[in-house]
Image (tube, rainbow, N blue to C red; front, side, top):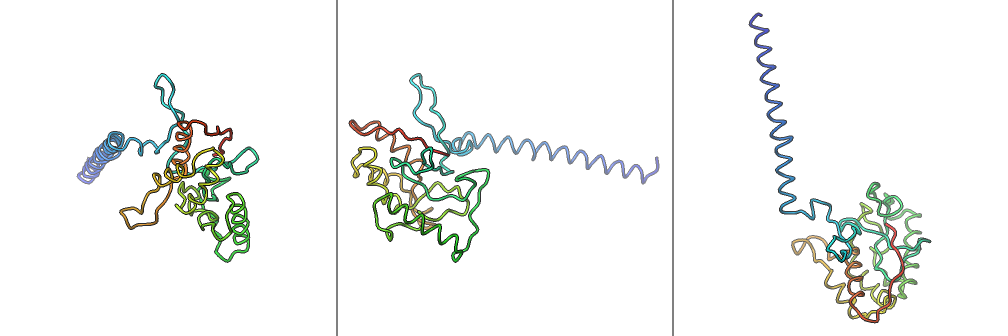
Length: 224
């Protein structure tokens, strides 16, 4: 074996050993460390920020009802909004809040179809909540860029309080207090706007109703 062949073989062996070492350290070791730290320090976030319903009598965890990161539609079997739930903003992701088809409408503000859809939504929301057309906030009639945003504005939440309280037989003041408790301010105090997570709010609403004597039971189901 001449010197050139030996040099090539030595270089190749060094490269193979380096590849194996860095694969073990960065591809396996680093992944295990980051996964372990995530499970120890941020278990809820690392596992999808899942929300669960009430647990069983024997202490079993409740059924997963969704993720606090992904919105849901609260509709009946015919696709009509359920009055006992706070409603989310529209979604252009698949048939609505489809995490496998995240997208916006990609329509510009002067698109005739978008303008018509917004006007139709505004009229429906105003009638559904018993308010004037000019009281309907913009997030109530427009989808987010991802189509998955679980948040609405405090203004849209406030607009729905009377309707939700009436449907559930609750005191509107209690429902307003619940909305305030689930209103998050801007990130770091100045980035973005205040928001209300609809899924978390509706889950807390169910807990409030269960603890309130004489409130109406809800029979509707939600479509994800």
